[in-house]
Length: 170
Image 1: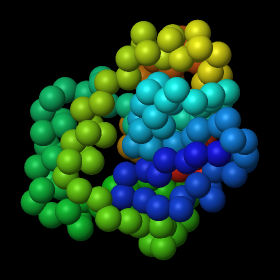
Image 2: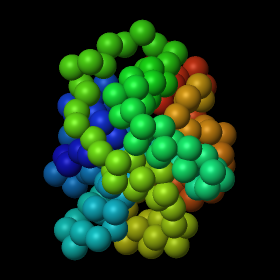
Image 3: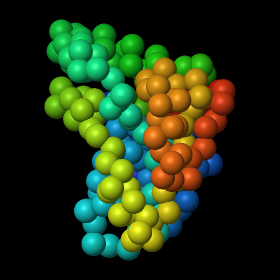
């Protein structure tokens, strides 16, 4: 199984063992990693049976001013930005993520915030035989879980975990 990490994180796949399938034909990603996993599968000539998107980063419903503000905040104080980001990722749990923090940069954040999930590409993957499963936390503090759910449920098998946050923990 190929796994793509979330923004500023490493080895956090340990939190998703209940959702991930250990198979050579499975690709999974968390948050920003969901975007990267999707593009990897879309552009891969190799067989992929299942794509698992865990709390996919979904910001296409936000105004450009929101994105500019996020990028300015990061640029002015990357450490403070990441600290607040991690607090939002773990909510509502008390999980400690210090050992999972990794280097990140402005370009990755910009890519994450400006990515557009393309319906036609999703449909094309499904037509190629890829099963896409999406898991969304109902108490997510990173993305608007309702908007994300509305988008993905029309196209994929989508699960809204009512009391879970972005990390899909309670």
